[in-house]
Each structure stands twice: as structure tokens, then as C-alpha cells.
Image 1 (spheres, rainbow, N blue to C red):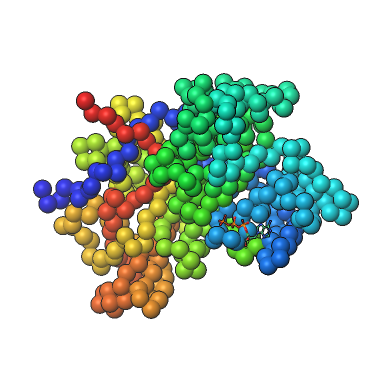
Image 2 (image 1 turned 90 degrees about the horizontal axis):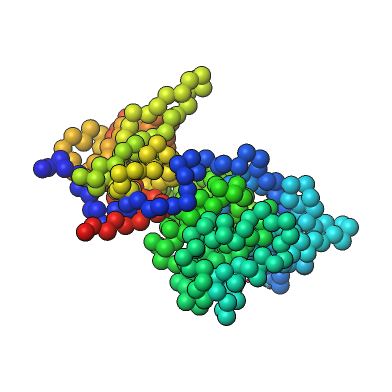
Length: 414
Ligand SMILES: Nc1ncnc2c1ncn2[C@@H]1O[C@H](COP(=O)(O)OP(=O)(O)OP(=O)(O)O)[C@@H](O)[C@H]1O
């Protein structure tokens, strides 16, 4: 039994019936024509100012990450048309939202931009359906019906319930449903799930991602949780002290934060779901196809990675799909020989490409078939093992170190 996987199955996340079909679960952005949001404005408060000059091309969900007080909500308020004091130019897909030079300012309600806040802001004396019907009244020539929006947000069964009787997650789904009914060209979400517990949050994120893929609606999603953004967003911008970075693909953006030492260092990667192993409580994943160095051919990685089981069903929907995963650098260790007799299920050959030393430990960057991995190890180990760049080693990590926000409904055994 010594080589049985050492896995705690408490994180089992079996199958949920989501609105997503097989194709829509893929991480790739499904919109073909990205929305261009052009920002060139300054907004000064007494002791703080936001000054942004950037064009963001939004294909699916662009994450906005930054510390508390860095200006994220102010940015969304300016885009939504709630900050008349902002000075400069804003446009969406070439149409001006604001131009201070000619005193153009399109009112918030005319911008076709939806905004979902952290709190749901619903009419408390109305039912779910009545809240949606109230919002729908203003909309002419609507393509999206209330019924369709109820289905998208999985609210059909709750439609006649008074909104005061709903949980936090259900209320937020009503807020999203109401925003969708207005058929915005862009949806802004300001930490919409920050008040929810982790399981409800992961359910909401999975639903929101599927809605984006079905409606092909571009979204800007603000959060100070990088793992939440890693699951939901295909690209990331960082807001810091009222300034905004260039957007970058999500995994690259997270790896750049590693090298700046701003968060717990982590490997951010997309993995393909190969098979579920219910007898062992594991799902087998593989590194996706990687472009070879001469760029002339692709090859598939033969390396498997095991995570806690993602779905338990006779009709698994995730097989063949890609999902984003995070592995914290503190959870990856390095061995100079192949670990043949370890309970740890994941071990991959890798080449060290960089070693960054701090006062307490070293962050080792490694490469396996073109995929970057990060391992945080003690200074003592780097010295004892005489680790150097270009060295060929093995990385290892437990299945439980492979995290995903993907939500699957718990199985109820009889
Ligand atoms: N109406 C206002 N008047 C004066 N100062 C303001 C106003 N709105 C925001 N600020 C200041 O602007 C700064 C940025 O606020 P903002 O709410 O945009 O930050 P944030 O990044 O969204 O923070 P959090 O993550 O905590 O929500 C803060 O220092 C805040 O005090």
C-alpha cells in the first residue's frame, strides 16, 4: 500500500448540472471580436487621484486586481458614468462615452454598461421575478427574455420568492440577472461575490463564466483575490495607486507578480482533464499542447498531473476540457533524483531556469515542456543540494496542492 496516493478526499468536487455545455467550459475566450475600451482620464480627490491612459481589448473577462484603496472601484464608476468629475476621454468600440474637450458626457443609463456591486441593491418588497420585470420595463426591442435570464442565472425555482428570503449568493444572481436583462455591451462587476463563502463563491464563478461564454458578453471583473481572478479571467490588469498596468494573459500576469514578490508565489496553468479515477479520489490532467522551440510543430506533453477528483458521474462533462489551476510555490518541492518511493503523486522532470534568493528562502523557476513552475524552498536546501540554473531536477507536489475554483455539486451517497 506504500505507493497508494496520499490524498485527502475532503475536497472532492463531483459533478454539477451547470448551464455550460462542453464547448463553453473551455478556458479560451469565446468572443471572436474583442471590445475596445479606451481610457484617458484623470479624477482627483483631495488626497488621491486616478490617472489612466490605456486601451483594453476585452474578449471575455478581464480581471482588475489591486490592493484596497488602489482605485479599482473608482475606475469602474468612471467607466459606468457615475463620476462626473472625471476629466478626459473614454470610448467603447469607438463610440465616445465622454470627451471633456467638447463637454460630451453620455449619462450612465445611456451607456449600455451594466454594473454589479458587492451588495445586491434589490427592491426588498418585490419577488425575484418582479425585481427583474421592473428592470425589464425600461428595455425596448429586447432579445433576452426574463425566462432566459432566469435560466442563465439558475433562478427558475426561486422566481416567486421574495428577495429578502434569498441567500447572499442567490441575491447576487438576481443582481446579475437584472444587469443582463438591460442587454449591456459591457458588464462591470465590482467584487460581486466577496461576501460569500468559498463554496458559494466557486459556484457563482462557474455560473458567471458560463454566462459570459453563452452571451459572449465582455466583462470587467474587480477583485483583490488573485485565485478568484485566475479562475474567471482570461487576462489581467493591475491597478496600483491610481495607475493601471498593461493587460497581460492571466497566467503570465500572475507569474509576473511572483517575480515582483507581491503575493504568495504560485504556478498558474491550464490543464486538460483526461480521466477521473473515483477509486482513488483523483482526476488525471495533462499539460496542454505546447509549441515546440522551433515554432514549426506542436507536440503534446506526456506528463500527467493529478488533482482531487473533479466530477463523479457516468456522464462526465469535463473530460477533454481545459480548466485553470493554481499550485502554490510553497507546495512544490525539488528532488535531484526521480522520487520512486514517495506517497506524493505528482512528480515531473524539470530544468531550473532561475533562482531568486530572499532573506528567508529561494524562489526557483523551473521549466517542464515549456510550462513554468515555481518552487519555494529553504536557503539550506538550495545549498545542500547545490542547485544551479540549467540543472535537471524533479519537482513534486501532492494532488491536494492542485487547486481549482471550478464548482461541482457534492454527490449524495445513499
Ligand atoms: N468620492 C470620493 N471622495 C474622496 N475620495 C474618494 C472618493 N471615492 C474614492 N476616494 C478615494 O479614492 C481611493 C480609491 O478608492 P477606491 O474605492 O476606488 O479603491 P478600491 O481599489 O476599489 O478599494 P477596495 O478594494 O477597498 O474597494 C481611496 O483612497 C478613497 O478614499
